[in-house]
Image (cartoon, one colour):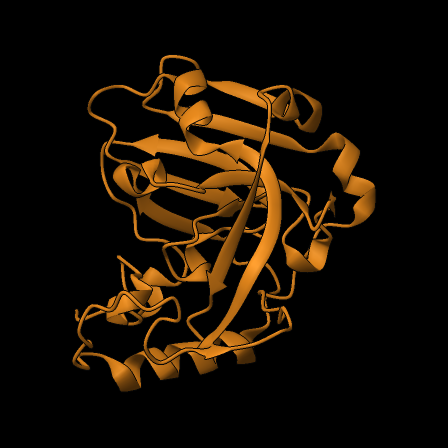
Length: 218
């Protein structure tokens, strides 16, 4: 991992140690409560990242690449992305660090529209998200068909600031927040699963909050 950017290494080490300490921990029973087990509701929106963010000056030149097992690969500017016609959603956000924020207001492109645009092959079963800071997150394609999954470009009716993942980021409300990649630069449709940044460091591949899938069993 010597080719990694200059990440906040103390933050990464702390998360790796936490994952190692809780590996093989028993998950809790499924819950229909709005607040997942083990979470605490907050009125704030804590900021957690690897210590590398784009500047606002980069926003006008931003490119989102759609690649992999697709019939229509593309490189979209922010303007071209917005021309796919965004929708507003209200969604809760659940962080693996045990806080949850209710009713955040986002605007972005429903992921079904990205699928329609990209025309993935029938063999594409996973999506790998790529970020400005070289972060990656892997998600089964089926999860991205669920309600309120969007490629977001607005937060609370304003452009998403860098500290919250702008100019564009994923929002996947039904999974822990680390799957909702910030500073999104690439959407790769893949036939094979490719564990992402935190998954190879001991975090769960599935990341389901209501059964507390925080850490890997491997």
